[in-house]
Amino acid sequence: MSPIGRPVGITADQTRAAVLAAAATEFSEHGYTRATIRRIAERAGLTSAAIYYHFPTKLACLEAVLSDVDAIMRSYWEPIMAREGHIADRTAQLLRASALINREHPHMARISARTLMEQAAGHPEMSEVMKPVRAYTLGVFDRLVDDAVSRGELPATASEAVRDMIAALMFGLSNTAALEQPAHRYSAAIDALADLLAGRLFTAADGKSAAASSRH
Image 1 (cartoon, rainbow, N blue to C red):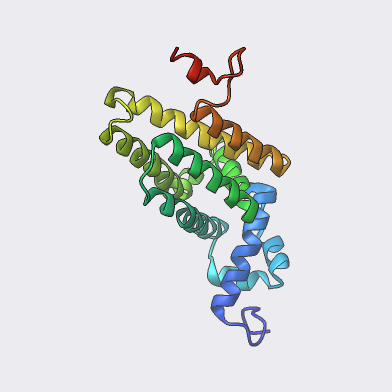
Image 2: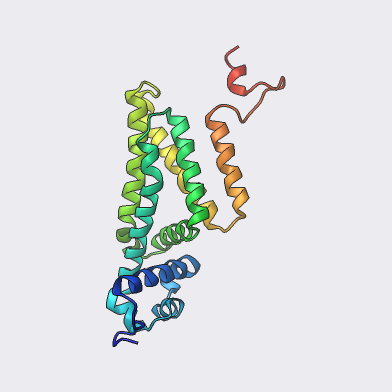
C-alpha cells in the first residue's frame, strides 16, 4: 500500500474512479446522512486516508458523484435534444432514455431521490450539491418547450404549465424508480406515458383511441 492507502501499481485516477463507484453505491443505499467514509473505503478496498486524499469531506464526495450523474445524463439526453421532433415524441424519447439510464446505472435515481428527500428534511447543503444536475434537467425541459412553441406545436401561453407538467412526470417517474420497484414496472409506466402523449392510451367503446374519437 502507498502512504495514503492506495494499492501499489494503481494510479491516482484509478483510485478516484474506484472511490466514486463505491460512493455511488453507498449513497444510493444509505443516503448522504447515513453514508460513511469507512464503508466507502471498505467497498473500494482502500483506507479512509485514500478517500480523504481525493475528497476532503463526505459532501465533496457526494458532489463528485453527482457530477458523474450529470455527465451520464447528458450523454443520454443530448443526442435526443440534438434531433428535430414533435414535443410528444421527444418527451417520450427522453423518458425511455431515462429508463435505460436506470437499467444501466441503477444508483442514479436512488441517489437523486434520496438527496432531494434529505434536502426537504432539513439539510440545505443538499440544495447546493444538487444544483448543477437540477439546472441541467430543468434546462432541457425549457429547451423542449421553447422548441415546441417556436414550431407552433404549443401556444406560448401554455409553455409554463407544460414545462411544469414534464418536470413533474420526469421527477415522479425517477422517484418511482428509486423505490426499487421491479424494472419492468418502471419501463411499462414509461410505455404507458408515451401512449398517453400520443393519444393511444385511452380508447372509446368502439376501440378507437380517445383522440381519434374526439375528432368525429
